Image 1 (cartoon, rainbow, N blue to C red):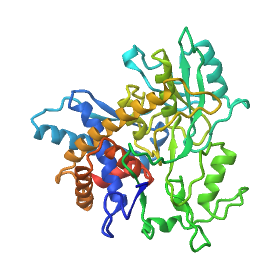
Image 2 (image 1 turned 90 degrees about the vertical axis):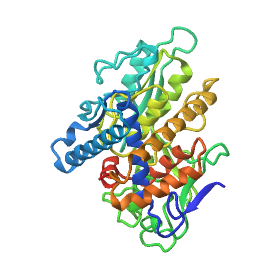
Image 3 (image 1 turned 60 degrees about the horizontal axis):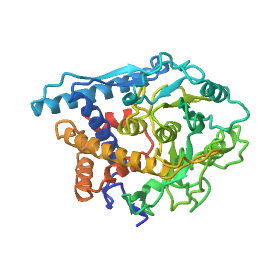
Image 4 (image 1 turned 120 degrees about the vertical axis):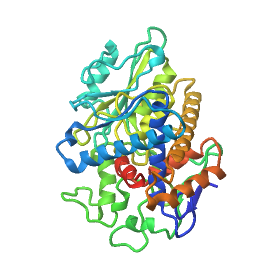
Length: 415
């Protein structure tokens, strides 16, 4: 079975609500992730962009979501006779400057977060490549639009391969159909989820599932519109490719699911392949996105594989996905890279299963919003019936195709 063609993520009935199921899945993931630290007396912090401080319409929901997470976890631990000594904190991400970095810190190799995210201490070769990425050197091609961060690996090896890796910006792919993976979800034909994806002025032309801004197909493009696209969704896609230079790997149809692999995730595969002397970074480029923190889906992956990020936010991780095979634009795969991708994805899948399972326990009747209780029960039932190693990770990927800030999902799903 290539995809699960059902009306909602875990149910195939008109009463199913895919958006509520997505909110339950991502709230469970956030709760389980945070609780896995708090139960071991380690505090957890989610960070807000400092630029949002002056906007109560953004900062207040964020504070509320973090408080709800902290309360739900504390109540759960107390009910299980585990007095929590850690807390879930709300904080601020580092401030944006051109070329500022997010770092995946490999603590097992003795690495530390850099003293300055604006001036990381790099190898001589790494400094040269970093400067090119930071300054958008015309000799390199990198995506600089919405969510414009570029993956980069500083290589401090002294023998064999000593070259840094980059740029590795966010790139678009088609979700694979592999026998080793739990099948991905694609809304059934006739599902109301397709309605906002019908292109303006057409009767039966739809934007493929997963595409960023795909649900704006019925809206007019925004002037100026040099792409000539007849709707906002297609305009966004063409601008991402032609103006902001995102690489598209494969052209999705309505029978595909589009996904996006962030630069940090690409950098971690390379850093792991090259050895513990290498450090993965994500460099802020462009001027549309300025949060110096990793999204929740990136954070789940990074923590699972031993490279926790320097900061985590609760914004969007739209149609996020890992890699499933080596991807080396302008370069070549390391001899061990296929095995590295397999092993890191397995570790990520296992962590997703742990987090979602624990999070669904914390989402008891006292903490789930009444409007979401039925969807929570449906997610629980689905995972009980589909206990494979990649089922929970797949549900997270499916939930991420319904684009929304994690702050909003958490506030809607938690009391």
